[in-house]
Length: 113
Length: 117
Image 1 (cartoon, rainbow over the protein chains, first blue to last red):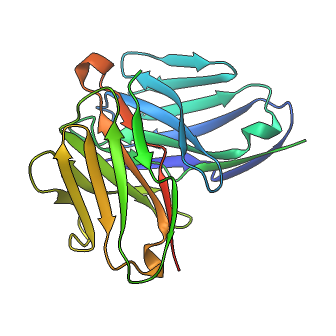
Image 2 (spheres, rainbow over the protein chains, first blue to last red):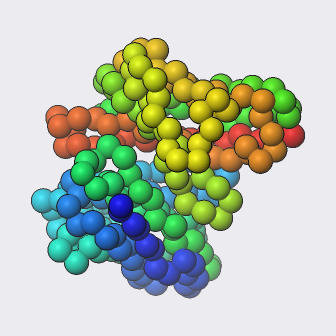
């Protein structure tokens, strides 16, 4: 059974700082991994999808890395802004397939102006 | 690109009534869709697998008679919360796999916030 852990659970940083969010998973036989953000009371917004064959994926100030062998992914946010404040979730396919995912518990990020 | 649309995004219903949430794959067919639920201060948990033309498969602990799932076509799955109670208030989200041509991408709907009063 896939288990997904995100550290830290909460993070508060001043505006402009670079930061790293961590996602660990137990079953490394995955097809891909997705990062999402969830704003309070809102839905999920897909940020990055990184395939198992990739080591990195970038979108604007966001960079996601994937190390399957160690069961880790990181989401790097450069030059953080107050608008980045949200909960960030990683979603990892369950063992044996890619269709069902297990979500991490999330990292709640607050960027202070 | 492929999009999964979920409706409504927000709904308030009275206790004891039923509410339906729709999940549509807009430009691709999905024989299988998935429904997740988010409990307060917890992450999203898989509720059930919706199978086109057959019965849904429910995860352990999910009441199938309370959460009715219908996958009547290759582009539409519906989740009906029957006889809703305040404890059913939650965030519900669906997903649909895009298949090998999409790089095995899983597409998620925007989610639906249900409040039962």
